[in-house]
Length: 549
Ligand code: 3UK
Image 1 (spheres, helix red, strand yellow):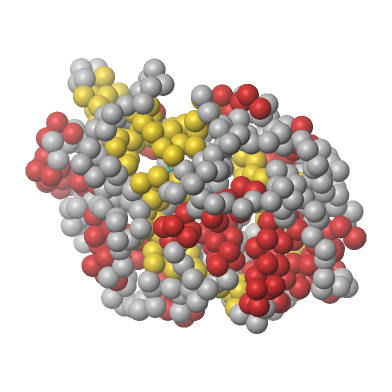
Image 2 (image 1 turned 60 degrees about the horizontal axis):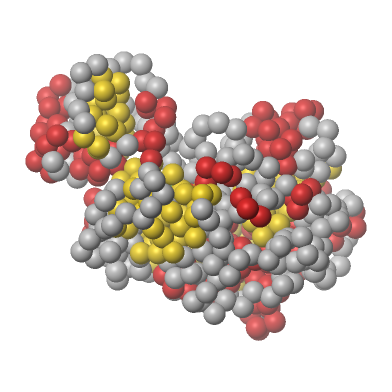
């Protein structure tokens, strides 16, 4: 079934987003079959997730938890409704306006996001680390009118505002110990707000990609997309329950975090812990303190936490989700050995909103991502756009109920081709078990001496060596071979980056995978460049000037 024209019966008075959706011909194909998905033509995501849970009788159950906060579903609903009241009655928000949200993960930030959507606004999450210049790019691109901002992060937003005439209204919120002006305004509002009767295809969320280079792209998501995501991966792969308590690290500004730490828990009536600081050292003790059962974080975080579990046992954990980057087989094994829990890996993207290929913990296999999530189809395409047989490396293509809709961006034609969403990843389908196996980002494949080598495979081999804490493998220009495999290695404490160590690591890789893939250059670092969402910034490693040892 194709998407119905998204212009019908929009509740948006401000038609900015509606007018900047890609033209119908540039949209991916949307498929809704095989799921029994009941998505009505009128749909407000906050009403369908939060209000519906209260109607189901969960009002007294725990919902949003954080430092000094434990709100039940009814209390969360009342808070969301008061903030929605502030937006509409005090701050003049009209449906379709874009509202910037700025803050570390907290129950208050979550309530603000839910309130914006309930009021018919479009929520635009931003990473707390962004500076004025980056904020200004987003505010300008999305023509943002309102902002709700953690008072502790006010400065950079104030500086951005100087550059952005569209942003006319900013309100700050505080902490449970020291409430701010937004909480004071909310206290003057009634605790019921009637949700705006949005169309299922009205835009609810604008998520800017954590992209490593270039101008950020704004991905638009309908109210329908958020509910569709809740109906695919969570019930079929994650299978969490109302008794579960979620916890984790991805920011709510990142769709991995918004789904995994807010929408998916709400959809099953579970509780969720929103931590401002969720480094591996902070996350592990928080799991025990809050009695969390579902952990959502990135591969490097599992690797770092595995080494600390002995001091901080996490007996309540029953499900662990990894996404954002490929999960090395060695990390999967380390975590299982440390906790007894098999990680659920899943590949998702900001464009698709959430995970579309994944494996349940009982079907998970080291080195493979899994199978298309029920509701999604996936194929491996050759350069000519035709589907490749199992075993051959090609471009990953997916389609399902969600799909790429860039805000006014010509790069739509790169991500969406012939109705497929092309994620930019090189994958193959295992001819034996049919699982999808990640190779590299398409533009990160290393071509050396005529061979195609995937950096992540070399990384996975290096990570099996007991001295290696972290590593990143890229292609470095080389006159003879075109490119050579170059490894950046962070050693564990107690090991030294010497010529002998480099030789030992090279030998180790030759013993572990096909010898031609071994890193001809090895350099030692004390850390690796990563994005705020935990992704290795390979482009920065590629720019490194020196040739290595
Ligand atoms: C890579 C993975 C191998 C892959 C995301 C879950 O990461 C998310 O969104 P982004 O837009 O990046 C998308 C790209 O990241 N990737 C993500 N997960 C995996 N590669 N194995 C994985 N498990 O290159 C993909 O194209 O930042 C992840 C849910 C929501 C998300 N937005």
